[in-house]
Length: 300
Image (cartoon, rainbow, N blue to C red; front, side):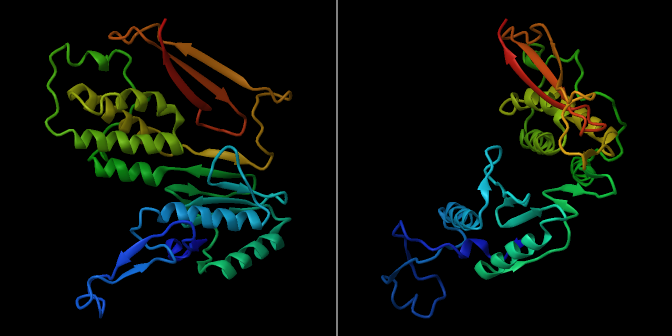
């Protein structure tokens, strides 16, 4: 669903916000000293996002939804209806059983807001949603293709690892490398990779973390390393995350246990002698992706 002009719905009760007449208003040129107190939010008002969130949050709570502890934009209800917010874009997920309850929820939305009830989701925030008889596969190929095109990497060759272990990013200045004259292109690449890591590619999280440390002073080797991650994404662009109908089984085997793998680079960060530790958790619901990854740096 899409709420049309969502920011214009919340009423302003707690704050006194005043504005002068907008340019072009009939009395605006003749009476420049007239001011008005806003009763509802406007686009461009710095309080508008918070007012909108407060408004829709209060509405969802009256519809018997509860706010998830895992994500402040995720709401759930006892009849297995899930609502995910992104500003005024709303994703509604439900099983077949509470379909009638979902129709009721959408009807309440229509009474409260002016909404556009869209077709079953095929894409949400750049994530492509596929469906088959046994699972809901998610892919990010369109986004990967778009950033490869944006940075002229469409025809580059693919590689199998996101980082070269022999490249020491923290030694670029000591080795006399050339600083980048314009760092905005490098920052744009890292920003695009960061969204990919957060959305669908946990296996590049460590590489993106290392590259982000160089955002303010990147060198040529940093650009090469960032492009290597793009090459890796090209080689894995067809990979999908498969969420099955069997629930969220997180283990391997019948005991439903959680399997963890960990490793360390043994203080390979030369400047600080920090070591990087990585952990991989392997749930049965994730196929092809290799599980969920996280990493951290610590001193030996």
